[in-house]
Amino acid sequence: MRLGKSLALTGTLALLACGLGTTPASAAAQAAASCPSGYVCMWEDPYYGGDLYVQQYAINGHHEIDGWNGDNEISSVINNTGKCVVLYANDAWSGRTHPIQKSGAQRLRPDLRLNGYDNEAESYGIFNSGC
Image 1 (cartoon, rainbow, N blue to C red):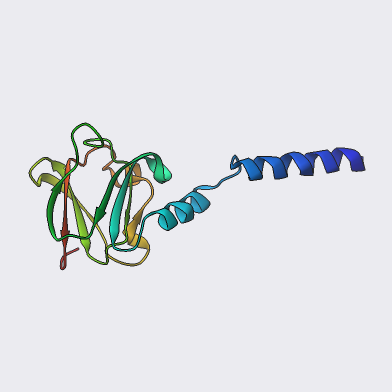
Image 2 (cartoon, rainbow, N blue to C red):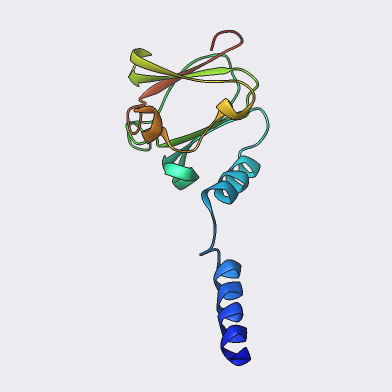
């Protein structure tokens, strides 16, 4: 009986060491650490998975998401800018908007499906005020 428990524990530890036991919360913590201070980062998949399509320094103004890499593919966002970030459903900063707060838990959007905004963003703005 002890051998079985020991093998089960060894298997669990191996899974955790390989990252297979990673939870969404730990994925969020890892992603937050990979998005530098002063930047907004946007990923292809929920919970900061897939390709990192946007890693933009906090330059005020309007920005396009590259049509070949990320346009209509953003599923998670981290706003480390200290500024308001607004996602736009269309190019040229038009269409339905989705604000990403500049501080607190609301600056983290691990799964835009929960907000009804998954795979919609085509452009975004970074602003000192708003949100």
